[in-house]
Length: 193
Image (cartoon, rainbow, N blue to C red; front, side, top):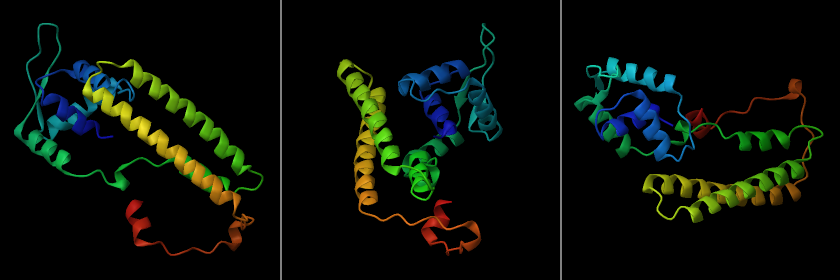
């Protein structure tokens, strides 16, 4: 997630101070991704240093609002025009966990998959209940919620697939570290690192 670009997008609505920006971000994302206020102000300071925002005079309450500059608008337009790259996304802990589970002695891979499937299905049910209860939800929150639903559905499909692959594969015993031979990296793997 790009806090920098998120703040620039919020400032495109108009001048705001840190707490307003945090509140607007959390509202737009349905409080799904809490934003640390320290991170907001650190990011605002960097944006000001890079001349993408400028601080306005303090208001009567002592809060200092910021507004986006032309350089910030150009940066924001570039962000919206660029697709998100796989390398920009955080590591997928579930994929890592299952990749290690199939190579770790004594791990019941089917159990790991089943536990995750159960948890993901519960989450999917909760997201579906939330969506049904949101008659007049803001569009931003609805998009976030639907994204979470689609990701949960995709995760369940992937878990089903992984379970089938593991069930028909004779898992080899992991090789000790001394016997490990480095495999050359593919270009895609190097790019994703």
